[in-house]
Image (cartoon, rainbow, N blue to C red):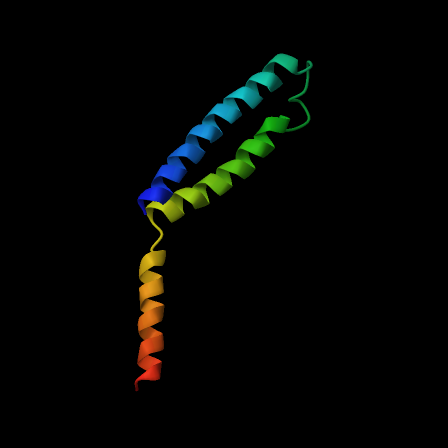
Length: 82
């Protein structure tokens, strides 16, 4: 569980740094009127990666997979020994 939380924090910091960089690139290279027709291109990356980050957060802080493995093992042992 601790490894998952450390991995999430690294993922979050990478997400923040890369998104700041990408949005700065967009800000300094955009042409006039780019926002008129739709979303700026970094928004798609930020959204998609943000969804993946949310799943990573859930797994690191709220996932109970360790208990699921133990429950499944108990079910299998109960089936073997009725």
